[in-house]
Image 1 (spheres, one colour):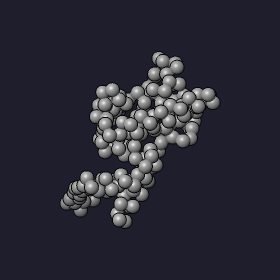
Image 2 (cartoon, one colour):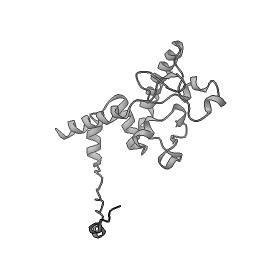
Image 3 (tube, helix red, strand yellow):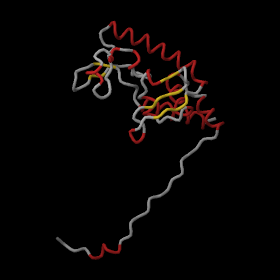
Image 4 (tube, one colour):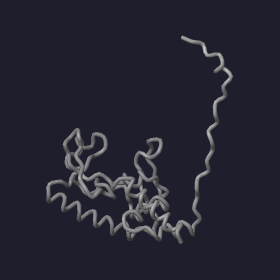
Length: 177
């Protein structure tokens, strides 16, 4: 082993501290005016319920409580569960979206595909839960995927990049004005 004595005097570089970009309320309204459909609904949850993107996309139907106007976030940052407020302003649009998801789920069941992948060992504990609507993702993907381990063919949630691209496009459109 060689001795590199000259390295003893090296100083570790400091990490730069970057301030986050924060939009004004007017800028947020402008960006939202260029969003529509599922991306707008997801972004409304990100903004109004203070969810991270993956938290919003991973929501199951059962995690949305309209009666108490709250959203239960499972396995959030630090692998903890938390509860956050469901913004009243998006309730009608979210209910309408979930009705579409319900109809899609019923069609999937008719075609023999309406199951979902359950967390942990719940599939063993509740054998039919994977077919129940309340365990489905609130924002399901358009296409099915196949689980390598169980050969289950199911709808995962939409990909993060779908929302990221929609936001990027909306921000660009709002800057062009």
